[in-house]
Image (cartoon, rainbow, N blue to C red; front, top):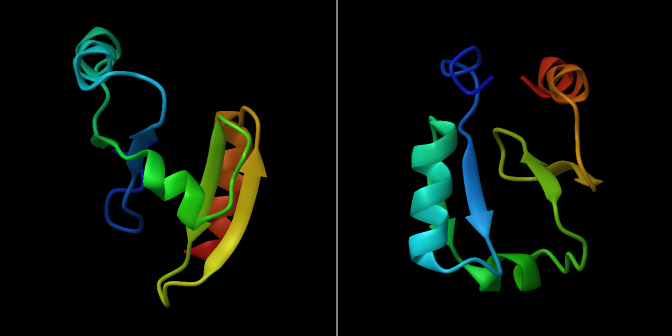
Length: 84
């Protein structure tokens, strides 16, 4: 999905509980095509107690939506098509 929307959106993954080493292993194992970081403070900044969560920020820097829990590719595409 990140490749499909690369001209319209920026994707980033943020780990909370994993170690940096575990996160790097995840990126390698699953071929994650976007930046990943270990930044528990991100969750606090968005007051987000549920993981996984998807936070979509629009081009103006405003939160367009927050999806708590897993999200399907179809659900993500619907959101991106509305926001981009």
